Image (tube, rainbow, N blue to C red; front, side, top):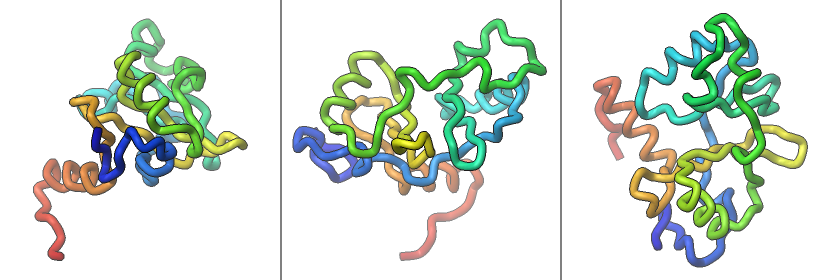
Length: 147
């Protein structure tokens, strides 16, 4: 199975397929602010950080009964939402497909956010930074850069 130009079956590491520049949210993001970000259907998870450390991964269902003014990070979690950059890509891909999970934060041993593993809707591969950048340009109405 092809993935970002990397063969998933080859057993490459998560770092080979992760987005190295994921969007992050500040530690003081409120539930209301998080709900506003989730209005974009391309947003599947919010990465809440402080000084580079990942505090929580927040998903839409986490906010179901949360008060609007509460810190969003208190309603997210890290358990089952993070992987390491050296983790086996095949094993992680299989687990993501089985769990119907599209996003996993990538953190180092100290808990610093180093990337985002972003499973394509098809489940056949991972989003690339070029994919993400192109989608952002398309939404902004900006033409692609000249080669």
